[in-house]
Length: 157
Image 1 (cartoon, rainbow, N blue to C red):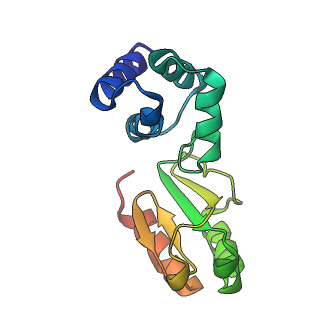
Image 2 (cartoon, one colour):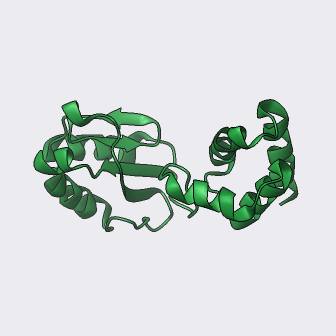
Image 3 (cartoon, one colour):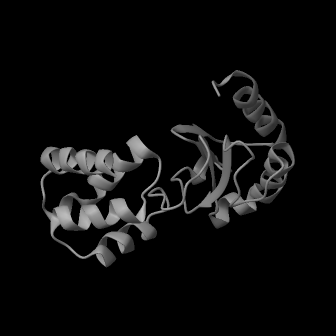
């Protein structure tokens, strides 16, 4: 927790201790630690002089502010009605078969997590997914096989 306190102090110095800077501070914690722990959220509340409930409420509202630990590669699939109409369900089944997990789960070894998220802002090119910071659009089962195959084979462990 000592490192987290130092991180939070640094982020509050960078962005400021006002409430309006809560999201950038939470994003900074995610960038460094990959998850927002309860301890980190309490520390942010103390640092910004706001309630822990307000910090948790903000973190739990936004799907990209993870309050649960996930794998190294977070695969986020758009769950909008448009992606659904364009074949998202078939893509999810393909991903589940390849990774041997269901939506919301993480692979053994914590390498991949499969998540659904609200709109990725790519509806015109859906169905879409995001793997960490990499966007993939106009997906088909074949494209999903190729993309995940590349991550499985070539990305560092």
